[in-house]
Image (cartoon, rainbow, N blue to C red; front, side):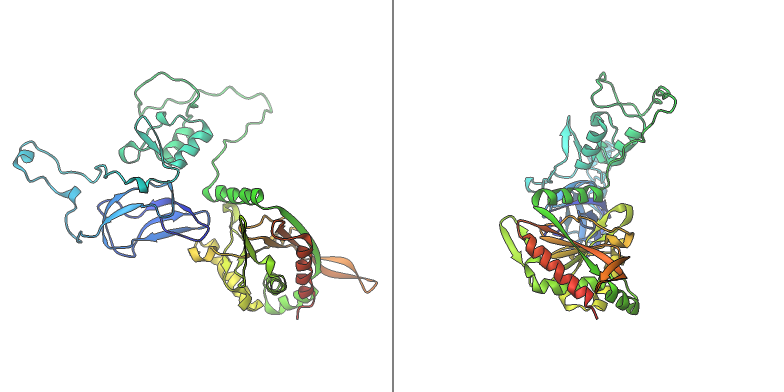
Length: 413
């Protein structure tokens, strides 16, 4: 399992492009993996024949775990051992058949045992994904027929079993031989008139689980506070119209400039280690619709103008929604900006992207009456919110940083 970023410690195999016995070239895609940040392809480190696959689809393992073995001494076109026909007279006389590619591979060494190693019972092994789905629905995995290699139970086997009206694990049943026949489930008693029938629960997607775990960990780790400030967007709106862009790149530029004045906001806090960064690696939260969200990073954002930031933000958002982000695109962020205002939101409390110490929230620009030089005027106003970690910052710093961003927004030219 390759290292996909500083904060990524594990990955899940989602597809094997090659199977045991297949030839693979160096740098050819051999499998696809999923992390809590992105899905990506893994290239073969060498040319050779795939000798064995050690990590099944759906299994999550630590970075550095051996996922497959490649026989580099093999040659293209050579018959694989599993394809060789026995040559001994005895084997021929007995009508022995050739060894098949479904022969069990040699056991992996202890060092390659996955984290969250597949559970086992009575000789059957289950991946973490299978175990989680079964536990959620109360399914006894011993009663699920497997269609994987060697009868292994796969995710789709469990889901199919549930759809067929699987009995809960808690229900004791007599020992019996599993049959492919599945009787129709008994019809449920008709509900009382007007009784609500809730839909069947569905397991969360991998990304939804990852987002939930990351957000929960942040709230449990950081002493999160949120400070808000109003800003007049008149100057930004004029420039935005001229540039043909949204307000986000301009506000982003103002936020970056304010970080020079308050560098302690552009920092990481990991345990008792506090790192203040000189470079601004800016995370931009990108919504993926119902699939969740992701935070690609603009490296050295302090070197970019508002126009340059606009181009980078558009490019990262497009690639994020197309699933084309690279591992380097989602790591090492030092400060994050989120923009729920594009959907009409007027106030929010964003969750800090660990191990960063602050996240800036840009809300909707709304025309409102405000007092300007003792007169009432209609101005495009917005609310800026800063969620910050009280372990690393104090309220005075948070307020001063927001005021610095506001000054730059209102004085933009």
